Length: 354
Image (cartoon, rainbow, N blue to C red; front, top):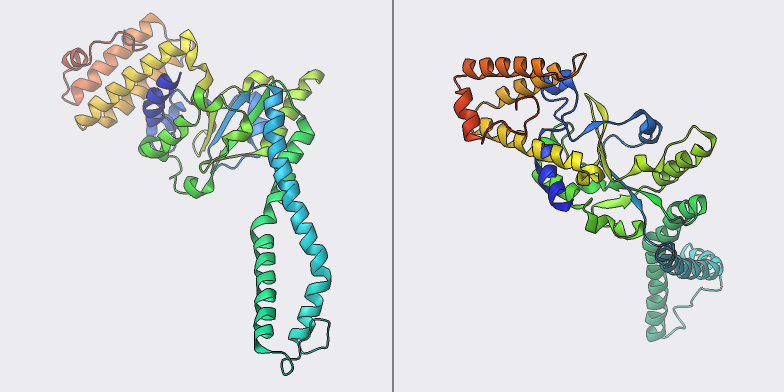
């Protein structure tokens, strides 16, 4: 799937999410591999930020490994919390006296500078300065560790425990996602497309969820808790099946709202065939772009989507009609229809034109 995902990720997403930027998608919806999020997931995606990219998959690693990856940071955060707690306890008596000294009041930390040797005075100043610096470091840098750990992993594990299959939701870090140009970046920003494709390869998602946090992606703990709450509701008959959270990419556009690319389906025979077809279509697009006829590609896509969406499906008669209309569009643009497809290796495999 990695090869297919990378290839189709580079190409497929090139034409996907052009919804708000091109007339064809505005009228016909998103171009595959992205589709509109199914109704079953609407309640899940509604609270998500439309400005971020989300990755979902099911973590099937061993429960013991999940426990171990939670235990190690738990111990680290307990140590950090203990150190901070100790400093708070000691500071209860230290800082009030120190502040009183600074404002000229008598306290246990007051020093008679006239009777104190300068070497001792320097030591006192350095010791107190060091204490303040250490406490500042603890408060500004380390204090957030246990706080975020409780608000994230602890609440997550408390809500779902450790399961054989767990829904993992990753959210793009705002440090790079803020650079994405809404509705257009999928088509035009290859660097960020590759970043997304690389994050959903089988090798990557083969790790347990807690190990997938890096400089580009964070775990969305609230979304993961919400996903499992929906799954648990299936016992009452109104929930969401876990399979709905199989490997996928979620993005939001102005024209079509939340879209989903089921990356995990790329390994099925049907989707492998569709992947090949998409690659052919993308080669078709690139060829027309080289000729300065990219608008012709958009009109062709709109034609195919229109014909295939009619009642009764994309029948043989509609396929012939679409081919004749496409041929006329090509001729109007001074492009030799037959020669063009000969250069492309024929129309075999292109849905609706074979």
